[in-house]
Image (cartoon, rainbow, N blue to C red; front, side):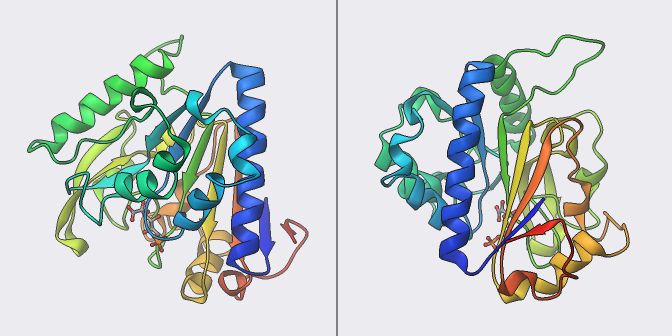
Length: 253
Ligand code: 6PG
């Protein structure tokens, strides 16, 4: 489903309503609400809105389990930290207890160890999934953004993490940024019950059309790897970002 909103304010309100609706449904049907946050600049406005009336009273935010889909290799107080952005925009405002905040400890030296530790933490909080082999748990809601190059989380074009089939979290080099990132992988992202992309601004129009309506080339457009197994994927886009989309029935105003 693609929701097209007139501008970024309408986008944030529509997304906030959907997050709260899914939160209520998740508590009713699964007894919990596990929410994976995205980083970058776009979701800040959504997080700020969720901490305000009326959204702050629509979900018991003190019982929500917060995770991150990816993190930069910086300390938690660094202005580039995805954790810090969400903490300042929402978690502090809502007074979320520390035990519900599961951040990626990228200040530690060995990010491969950090990635494994984060997998174990997710399994501790969400529990193991019964069945053959080690299967990823199901987050209730997974928020994602998309870069102008079609990357999502820290799954960048032509990187090894795109083809990860077993691990849920990996640390990997992102040559184009000359840095290391820790990111969730397609197997655990696609196990989520709901996935919500937030994409705003004219600079994303070309890539959004290529990702959604262009030929399949996930090495070039990693966002094309996101197809939930049994869950639902929703794209919340503003009008400038959807300028290149061919309008059809799946695009809702
Ligand atoms: C990150 C994000 C990344 C982000 C896109 C879009 O750590 O940067 O998780 O995947 O969602 O880069 O970023 P903007 O919202 O800033 O355009």
